[in-house]
Length: 308
Image (cartoon, rainbow, N blue to C red; front, top):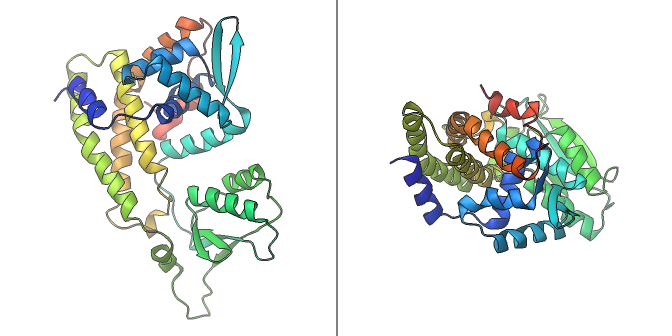
């Protein structure tokens, strides 16, 4: 199977939804180039995936309605950029996607408590939804927890929801003097990892053959820029869909072997093989509408532990 055959088969069997694909392309390709794109360039970036002008306009309109994108006009041309409130969420989510899976456990848990009812019903619902999305679990009524919480990300989340100062955020460890149950057992009670594991295994079965095809193409002169861009986008789109459902537990608390580790290494290997050629396509496309479109920022090259 060559790369074109793999792309055609993937798009036929699992075509990405337009709105979700726009989010992937913004996060993977447009944010590193300043976070703004002219509609003409965006149309060109979506075309290889079978997303036509009408579908794209509907997708960006809905994302603008939801506060993710802001639109501007310059004469007859339109541009779209990630809004300031949404940028922090983009950066956090995509930092997580490209980060190595090497979080270790120090034996403690971060607990979020709403003990005195300081939140109203709407705030409680919003906090619960966002914390579940961040990988927290309901430990007990009014208590959510995680064994490897990202403190700055938690602080940003609570401030964004307007509930900072209304909740207790504490860290706790098992008391050595007390014969209690191991805190590691909270994982089995709080998370069902079977669905995440199946998602990773499905991803590996889909993209494992692609790695061999990419390596064969590299040995035969390399990939065309647009071809590399399509592969990179489909790779991150599929990996993002699985990985953002992963609660990001420390390695010591995960089943062994954990398919997420293999999925990460597979994603990293393919990304390293295609990113440079894909950047050529992205640069060319963005500069067709804007000759001053910036090259990828230095932080882009820190992805997956370093793009070298």
